[in-house]
Amino acid sequence: MRKHSISFIIGIVLVVFAFALASASLVLMPYDPEAMDIYNRFQGPSPAHLLGTDHFGRDILSRIMSGSLVALSGALVSVMLGALSGIVLGTISALSPKWIGNILQRVIDALMAFPTILIALVLVAIAGKGLLPSVFAIALAMVPVFSRLVYTMMLETKEKLYVKAAVIYGSGWLRIVVFHMIPSMASRLITQFTSSIGSAILLESSLSFLGLGIQPPSSSLGMMLSEARSYVLTYPYQAIPSGVVLLIIVLGFNLLGDGISEVFARRRRMRHV
Image 1 (cartoon, rainbow, N blue to C red):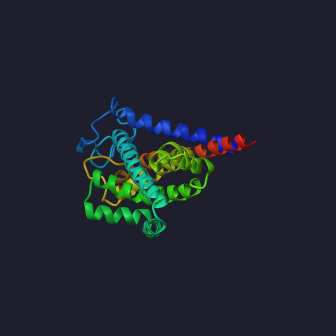
Image 2 (cartoon, rainbow, N blue to C red; image 1 turned 120 degrees about the horizontal axis):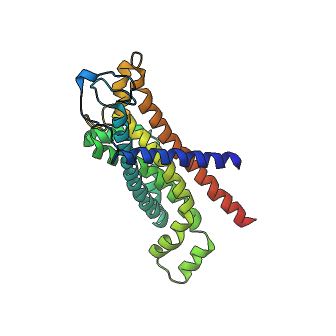
Image 3 (cartoon, helix red, strand yellow; image 1 turned 90 degrees about the horizontal axis):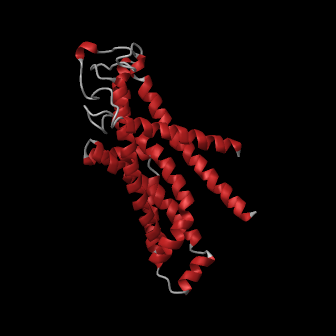
């Protein structure tokens, strides 16, 4: 119990740090993250540039702050879109005639057989590079995860007595889903949503690292790592900060998701005592 409590607390601390860093970029940006200064390239950490400058003379701290804002906002939007689409698709699969549900879930199974990064790469290659295509690609990659989860939970919840009672009393399926079934799944959906944000950020960074996500001169943590790899041995301070921040954000959401899962599990155990 103590282990999970520590994970939950650490997750909250790391996530709060990530949001604070991203929010600070809106009001406390030290420099323009896109402004180049060729005469001050490869500057080490100093009072003027706390994390140094990159190969174009851009302030690394400013680019990390801007990249964190882009990563968090893009991940939140993409996961929300993917979650809503997955919930709708999973609900339709569970409540439709069996043959329709089987067809839909076989398609979902086929999508889940492919690595998420591969699905995103294909979609970005079709839709084009940039933040918006990346957001939709990540959202579509998240749909099978939420669809499968909701489909499985819906099949279990349909057999509950309170659902059967609502059907007997004449409640429509839309009302039953919205007011009875979805609330009973809230704990698992919240856990999956939180963990998926970390996965979405890592996926966006991977796309940007490969040159398929956010394009220059905009900043992205993945793109910063890609640009710094050529100088990692001579100027390691270019790659380390962005890598550490990316690690903190992804780890924070994963730990928070695990902690939330344990909190809900503990509450269920207490109700049954």
